Length: 440
Ligand code: AMP
Image (cartoon, rainbow, N blue to C red):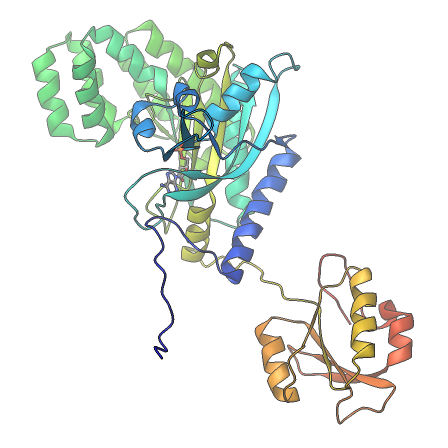
């Protein structure tokens, strides 16, 4: 017989989270979501799949091409797995929540699916934790997104992070001023997104705009940095739309400074990558140790109108897998907890093991039992491997019939307890916090 384990294939781009990884993932998700709820955001749950044409309403073309699609057996219509939560929330707000008082503060935690070439930190199924703030066009809403993102990064224990903040309308104003065709605009956008100065130079020469516009375009790749960027930009800009965008960015920055978070922010007027999707202030978050952004978001005032309800909105999302990679890179330890108690019972009838585990679980402790029969040392090795805090040994060689041995696994320290007394008042011997962490 072939003894090699069967190795069924896993499709590209998906990931299995083994227990320690799943615990770390849950820990990250809980930290983020509890932060969101402290800002007043309430969770919504969206369907994993919807009709492809409905989702496409709020999805730009490149992302539409990356959606996983399948056929609905009932109707023959095409379905798609969600590739982004924002269009789903936009449709929910436009259809089910439009009469609710504004602003709406909504949070989510879900997996999304995109056909992308897998890479380190790039999956086809990944997990986003984020929020949407709907019904506010004020800069205060944008500042709330930035402040919450910084708080999220801090809640994960990450240091050395930076948010690159841009304003989509700044570049839109310049394009309007140029009065050029879409294709030419794209070329400019692509050169800028790569910060490719030589291509930009060539394109500007070809377009031959007025000298002041040429100067601004050529300066764009360098228009990033601290607050002084606003002044540098203001000196160069000549059209009303970009001026308004700059004033808006300045106000958001003032509020971010008032939150005491200006240190975390780099302003980037040449940032054009999210320009198709976003309508105002938008940002991406980077941490040292991870090449890709681990969070991002911004204002998308035109999205809800696509679902028939004109209403401003902004939001952001963290990618949980990337957050875990960043924490690993920065050596941020995630607490991994095992059960509070591991009960080993050598008696044939196991009566005490059963009643004791029941009693301790009723008090909120986590209790696992060693159902396999093996030597005490082997059982203790297993218990340590499970990260149990205490082993309770019943019927072992060191104790009498009505006693048990409690071993603190981290230190090996032992004490003998009377079974009846422990059953009657476990709290006398162990302080048990609901949700884990029994203490002697
Ligand atoms: P987006 O919905 O495209 O704005 O992405 C929001 C965040 O999700 C980004 O900042 C990334 O951190 C993350 N992200 C986007 N695509 C992927 C992917 N294929 N795999 C993992 N994370 C991703």
